[in-house]
Image (cartoon, rainbow, N blue to C red; front, side):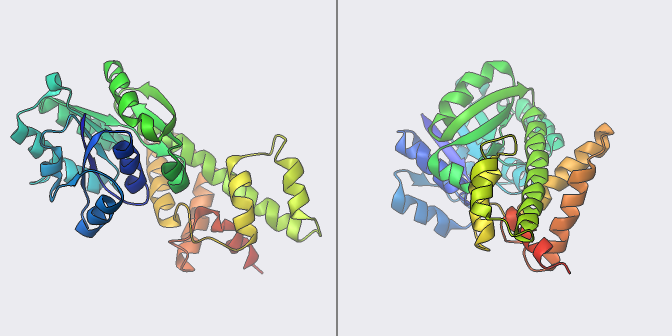
Length: 296
């Protein structure tokens, strides 16, 4: 199968690599061309100089970008994906599917789905969870919004880097599910930061504390994978605050549209804003502990 992968960031780079290793014919595009060259040094495939060139002749096109505006430009720009599809003369009867792994608003996903349908192809919103380590290890969870008949093709294509995948509804429902994911993470990380801070000020052996409570109701992925790096004051890894605030902004906007209050999420978002002002924008989201430690 001919596949185009657009966006070789910390997530996209290894994800595209898994597809190549699985035997797909992969053409990659990245805005910074040197990143595509670096990818080709590690994996088998080709590079394209525009999204249109990457999409031309591809049966499935995958995106892993940054923001709503990035996805819209990659899709509808002068040298965008839809232009490549138009040039190749392919349509949905040929199996042309665009799978977007970017975390965006559901509004954008719905709009891109309509735009793709007008071109005779399909747009699938499929944000992922699992972070950079999940991408490297091929252990991502994927939340899918698409027509039901497309799901088998999505599952087959993304299998090399997927641990779990589910269709939650039509266009936009994958993104709404990712919002649920981010809301959960924000609260869990703040709770973990407060728990560690409390333990440190009450003469507890935190290693032993984590060993026992992680096996009970308090256990979480964040506790198992972040408590040690938080103790080591190591935040130069993982998912940056700048990107988390982008995601939480999407959550809060959707909450306003649907008339839902998210008081804890709003509070944690403000904590992240404070950390950005402290110069921690590129630090991992678990840096919430540092904010507590620096309070008097």
